[in-house]
Length: 235
Image (cartoon, rainbow, N blue to C red; front, top):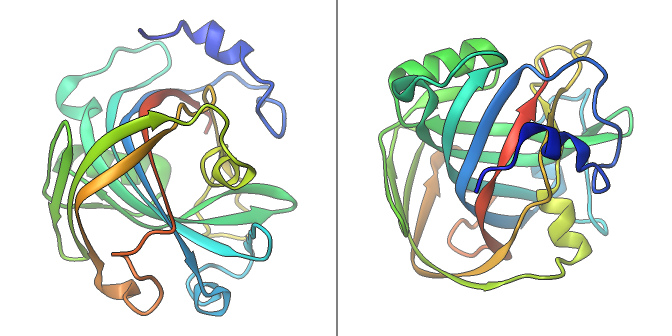
C-alpha cells in the first residue's frame, strides 16, 4: 500500500540532515530492489571519482554497489505519470562519497531499459544514463549491454529487523552527486527507511568490462532485497 506524500515528508527521524526547504519537484518509486555490495581498493576507486568529491569510508573500507530495480510512476510535481515514460527497469553501479561533510552516492554507470526514458532521465538529472535492454521477472534480471552483462536469479529470504550500521551506511543515502562541476550542489532525495531482506542467489553472473580490475562482481560481500521505497527528489 502506497503512503500519502505528507506521511513520507513527516517521517524524518532516520535522515542525517533536514529535508530541503523548497518543495520537492520529482516523485518516483524504486521497486523490487536488489543490492549487491562490494568492498574495493580505495586507490583504484580514487581514479574513477572526480577529485572534488571525497571517497566515503566505513571503518576504513571503500565500497561500490550494483543496484537493480524498477523505476515506477516517475513524474514532476502536480502532474500524472505517463506509463511509457515513467516506468522502466534500471541497473546502476554506484560508490559512496562526501562533499563538504555531506554523504551521498556517485554513479559510475546507469543502465535503463527504455530509450525515451533514458534520454529524458539523462537530460533532466544530468546523471550518466545509458540505454541497455533489460528483462526482468519477479525473481530475475537479464541485461546485455555495451558496458555490462548481468544475469541474476534470486530468492527473497528473511526480513532484517535490525540492520547493522554497515547496512544502514550502504543503503540510507539521501544525496546524488553528478560530479561534473566542483560548484554543483547535490540532488537531494527523501524516502522512508529501506525495508531490507536477506536474499539468496540461484544465479549470479555480472560483468562490467570497464571495472573488471576493481571489483570481483561474482563475489559480493553483502546482498539485500527490498520491496522498494517512494521517493521525493529536489532539483
